[in-house]
Image (cartoon, rainbow over all chains, first blue to last red; front, side, top):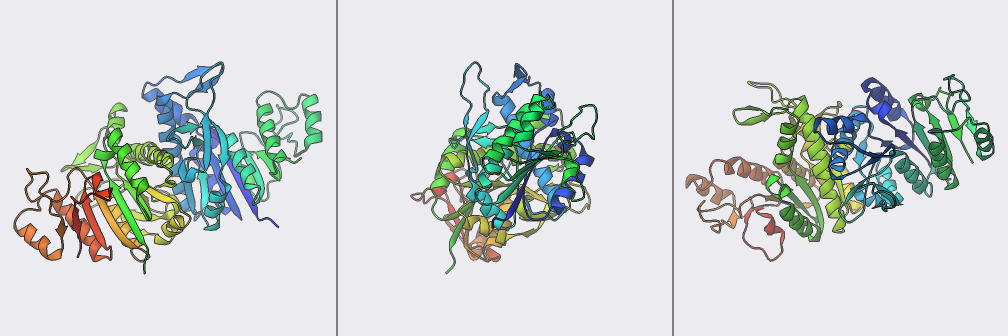
Length: 259
Length: 259
């Protein structure tokens, strides 16, 4: 029987709120068994770019990562955010080790091909080295990944944190029984967007089709759900979506997705 | 018999020169056996601080690390510099893993006690966990340390890179036959400061006394040499001082210190 592994992704909404982050890191530290944290960036990078007079280049609402932006991202994601999370986890007796995808050659990617637009230094993942991650877990380290990959030719690349989390989860599923947790602002998938407690607690491939048909899942939730089912179809056992409270063992109000 | 381990420290003069850094990282990658890289910071942090209008506070020529400076250091040392070095080593097929002292709780320190002056977030090292470093080496990873420690209570701390290198070397000497390489601008300890090739190739405790007496070693070299002999007295086998060329196997012009 495979051992259990939890992979938790947090985003800007948690990272930017010191109290929320501290509370989350305590819960994360108390989580039993093997675990991995993946964190996004948040507004800190944008703030620093503004302070330095570096313009955020966007195309149709999507960010373009030019050389200056990549420097900012490397400083904030891999430096400030990652190391502060690691130091805080250490204070909770969680033996964290902060990583980018370049470290240990764990996440190899290639620069997104230019089609209509050049997104700059954005990496599409080719491969996650599950064996190195497994070896780190085996020596009781808890990997903490920032949202960066590399191309193995010396170039760091910016990669979406949700994608990093799901690709790590998929790779680790060959060795572990993997649960992927996406923490976001809401308690889960809501039947009624105006009712924060109208959480759909369980979704599978069948009920997903119905939710799509009923327009319960639309807009921003669509790519998130596609990402979840992509993970499930690639041997991730379970995907949970909710706010950071879902890590508390007594919490029941979040969405669990299975195939 | 103990296996051999090389610990190489590079400073700002290498990091700031792209060509020099690239050449060094190639030599480092080709180095046989177990190895560890320790890098300092350099002017990048000062440049970023200036751009952000953060004043570098100094006291009698020594830098004070206030909260803003610590953020800059975390972004530049642990982020930009560390991850770019890791990505470049990866392109040379060296399986590097970038670390601060908080990662894996490897370098535990305490904030330097306030006597005449509060140096701010500067860490004096208490303990280096040789066993975690050994485990990383054993799974064929090459640790790359930036000059940061932590206090295990959630606080990152700025720590001198020379000291980090010597304390890691001392800790690792319980397991490995350790050689510590300090790369700096010159080819080694010079008999005549005006003659770059007047390298004293071998120094031991006895000849060191004579060099001190003859005023060959003075000023900035004194603390460096004290640091070297501190390492040697604590079971580091050999300390070498010279420029980055000393890593090339055919190079002979550098200073080797032994007890």
